[in-house]
Amino acid sequence: MPDIYDYMAWRGDLGIKQDGFNEVDNLVLSAFSYVPLEGIVPGVFGSGITIGEAALKFAENKALHKRLRMREDKRLFEEIGRCPRFADLQLHCHVDIINAREEEQFSAVSVELGDGSLYISYRGTDTSLVGWKEDFNMGFMRQVPAQADATSYLENAAACFNGPLRVGGHSKGGNLAVYASAFCSPPVQDRIIEVYNNDGPWLHADTAQKPGYLAIREKIRAFIPQTSIIGMLLEHEERYTVVRSTQKGLFQHDFYSWQIAGPRFVCLSSLTNGSKFVDHTLKDWLAECAEEERARFVDALFQVISATGVKTFQEMGEKWRSSALAMLKSFISLDKDMRGVIGRTLKLLMQAACRHLPHIAPALPLKRNKGD
Image 1 (cartoon, helix red, strand yellow):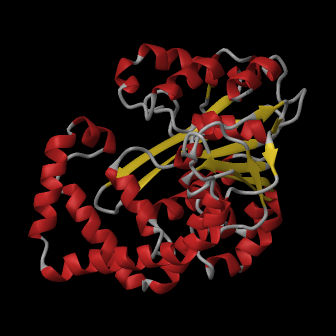
Image 2 (tube, rainbow, N blue to C red):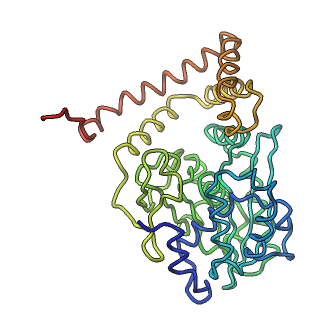
Image 3 (tube, rainbow, N blue to C red):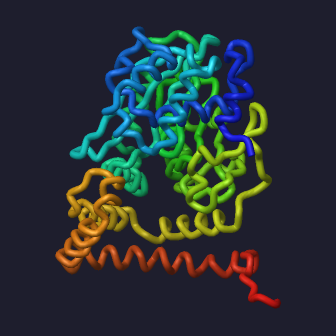
């Protein structure tokens, strides 16, 4: 079935000024934010570079290739770089922050669309342990550093660019897009046309009641695959579009598997029972597990993971034997109280899962024996 590459082949000959910006363009530019652009795109507004020019420079910079999140991102950059719809778009103000002390991973780039508007693309979580730690911190913190920087970035973009604004991202990038749009100043909010959350976690229940969020709520467009897990975390928006994915389970988070028909996604009427099960389980778990306990659990978990000495999950996979041994030793060395925190938290999660499993069990497909 058609994917974003088929979309570029089908619609790639027409510029956005000729054929207006659509939801698939949003996904392409959200995906683009994962590409490392250090030394290629200036870190300020005003002195931009086209996507086509950036693609040529990236092809020559082998050091950046080693920083790719996955091989598919390299192909995406190559395809966008020679696609007329995107190649001449101007890139501005690429920012990339990894701060272990502040437990922050943040990256963004702005794309001048040629129709007078600017698309601000926030990167989702990369493979760094710091990035994943910040994601976990969202479970108990009302604001993580990346959300604060996302808001500042949006304000800076609005100050340097006069036209309408579109804001989006995938995974954590989608969360940052919603958060920044909700907490920027009212004059900036007035210039925002649309906010795109592509399978990203939502906001805390109390945050979603703030005046700033309510002011931009109707501008948010949320897309999640049929077995969404990441996009159903926290107090998610009920108004979302379910997109068909060719992957299974958690792998549907991969936007390269999302199916497209013309300028739109292939949509489904509802989520799978598996996604609903995870949603209800995690909501019960968060309701029963106090925020202080969640914070201690996350700190203990990443204390164990950090004992590996690696900085990315990719590196951990390459050194899985030594990493597993280091984590086991680290867990054993934890004091009794910290081991208790991990045990209690996981027990609450299992209890929540057991409560909801019977409600979806009748709908799950049964494995039949031969001859049945």
